[in-house]
Image 1 (tube, rainbow over the protein chains, first blue to last red):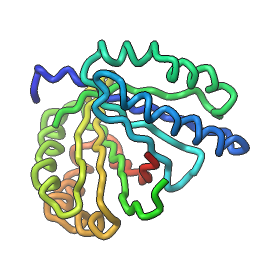
Image 2 (image 1 turned 180 degrees about the horizontal axis):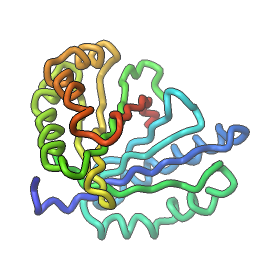
Image 3 (image 1 turned 45 degrees about the vertical axis):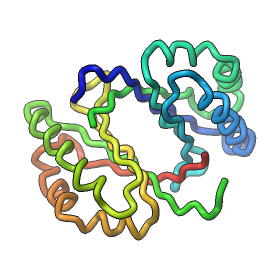
Length: 101
Length: 101
């Protein structure tokens, strides 16, 4: 393990309300372009479950905590957070990880 | 979404027995080199939780189901599966996803 590795990995899980699935997916997809353009965004991939089409997650690799803190202040992320109660059946579930290889 | 996209994404979660943490981590790390060398392995990253050092997951991107089927037959994966009961507190939890962006 490289102790100089400041990268932060997030898994951000979202479960759409079934009747708002299309809108929820569109909203999540709209995050991709502006987020990938951010400083320190190394990877930002959106996935949909093979078993339950309402379940999504982002796999996010950030260069540093500072970059992630800036991400939290962006209009696109704040907009997603604002829409979360309307679109998602559960609160967004975000967990933090270190990449060890 | 690109319908020609045959990629399969797996999240494989492992929870080590606390008293075997070091051995479990070593066993998971040993998967990296031979797996990344496999045909169709696009990404294979190992992570450890920031909240619970016994919790790990692999983020796996495979080019196709065929490549993943071959991965299942490799000696290194079979060896991991054989050691799972000994090293891990819970069964390996593998979920399947499609990347939609």
